[in-house]
Image 1: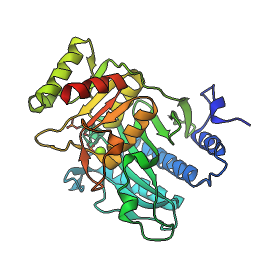
Image 2: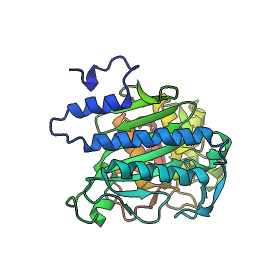
Image 3: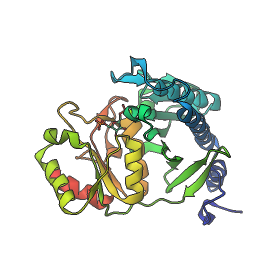
Image 4: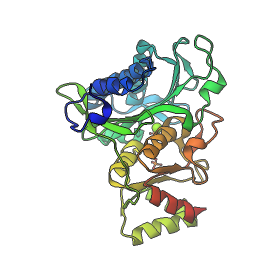
Length: 330
Ligand code: AHM
Ligand code: MG
């Protein structure tokens, strides 16, 4: 029987097939996590349809409300949240959902084993201008007994306890990239067929990248040490690339080699990005490919979680570049 390691030829293996093959590698697997991954894949397809039609359906622009971070919600942010909530509810494998768009933890099915933390649609400033945006998700196994109320211990798990994580990039093509802790694989969506196909098998991030990604507009507010690192990148012949959509910036650097930085700033002393549904998932993915992710002081995946909406600075990407940056700023 075929296994995931036999998948030398990338074209032709659908996401569903791959998930099934990966599950077969575990004799004790119950299929619940596999089903949850399929549910996320399904929601991603539905959201992809909404995104590609958004200009025609009056789905662009502001919704007129603010999310829990006090940021203006875009209509597509709201649509994405609804689509994922619905798919996870119908799938039945999730006991609780943490979402960037929801103030509180959403209880879904107390009889389920998994919690999901997600940013249903990241890169809000790029929605209206046809630039890449993404979905980010983290999956945790609950610590408490099935059937009981979800506890604080279930909800505030550190990133290293993720059992799976991934993202969907709605770019020039739509891709779903995920890991269950055994390498990272990318699946490209074939819109005419309506399936994700394995296109990037066992992604590895080169240790020495040549791209740095940081919002240069914050130059005057950055620490001197960080400015010195950026200056060094320039002198070393690195190129600057910054889309302003975390998924797209990290994905590019994962494939090409580079570092993405969102530092602490006077207006965001703890960084802007959210630990539980932005940084942790990408940190797990990047580490699985051989890269590194830090908040400037410690590994992202080891940061204790006090609040599921907490923010963190983020230094993520090619291992040697991240190390060099951390050395210079510490
Ligand atoms: P969002 O969750 O409101 O979309 O904000 C997160 C986004 C990231 O995708 C991106 O990397 C970052 O904010 C860009 O911020 P800035 O415009 O400050 O550079
Ligand atoms: Mg976001």
